[in-house]
Length: 128
Image 1 (cartoon, rainbow, N blue to C red):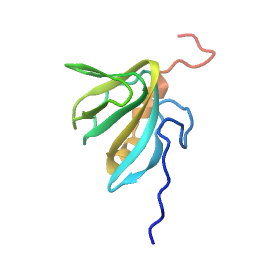
Image 2: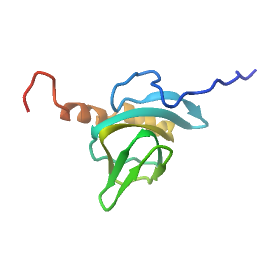
Image 3: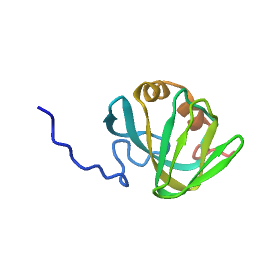
Image 4: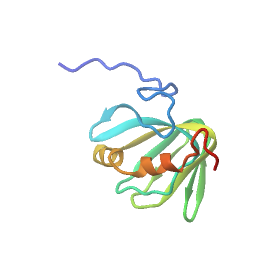
């Protein structure tokens, strides 16, 4: 017998807390993962094999492409096409909901994309 669903609060941290660029998974819909990320600063240039839906729920996120820039404010969304290089820029912080295929999500979690971002960040106590 199916379980009765419960509401999800998109504006509060899920598993993963407040860590930046860390996926806080809410669940799955068919073969897609629905998760939130807290964004602050500039992420690295990257691309995906499949489309990705970005929904801004708090703050403001600038999504930079090689040939265009789009600013998302709360309750605005952007579908990022497969194979298109992009990076989010969030000087004042933002929270986004992302929906993408589970196979793509699983591959990203085992990739070096997040490691490359972590290594590019200033380390406390070290001068840059």
